[in-house]
Length: 292
Image 1 (cartoon, one colour):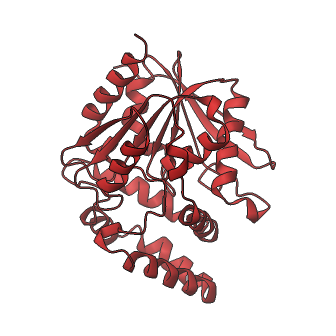
Image 2 (cartoon, rainbow, N blue to C red):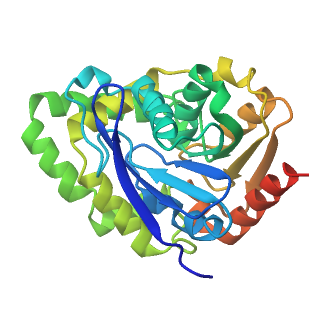
Image 3 (spheres, rainbow, N blue to C red):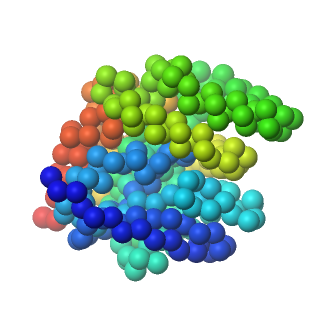
């Protein structure tokens, strides 16, 4: 399989924040939206595969990596990110695209569809959720929420100390192993290099910006939007995903009329990295069925 050349660029979003993007391939457009704190690398196998026959667009969210942190910190929100996606499609003169989301990217796409449904040709949801994901994460309704609030309070009191511990601790081999044990990755299937790239990426983020975006995610409930989705949708779940368990994907499937649900055996929270050939084949067949 040939490596498709990459074109990069930036544009200024509604509030002047500069957003970075990458484009590969030609054809019908696919726009990739990763999880909060993640990187374009989370879509690496899909980019390589689908850029052979589609125009594949990936980008960095505001406050993520090569995109800027907004000057107005009130614009660290899911609404602002939905507007960034609209701005990206306007900038690239894309009227409709297949919009793909992983994890938080699904929640953001729900808000984007709520505001701008005309841009969606089809939707691909991978290990996603549309409401507060901490309820029920790792099998506990309260423990994860309490841990986040404790971390936030600690950061407000000791920002430099907690920031240092965040940047160093999250990249440690122990943290990587724990993230895998918690269902974030399947170490038997996902390359350790991909997990290390993720750890370095999230450690490089501005922690205050991450906390604000994370809180915006917790307060948004996109379930009412799902009942209004009327474009073809496929929902992919991982059977071993403890971060966003299958109940999230099953509820989305129930609410989105005519949607397709596919559960990946041995899939963790990153099924697109665990079993990329299977995921790519399923999505490829889904897209091909829309052309008939």
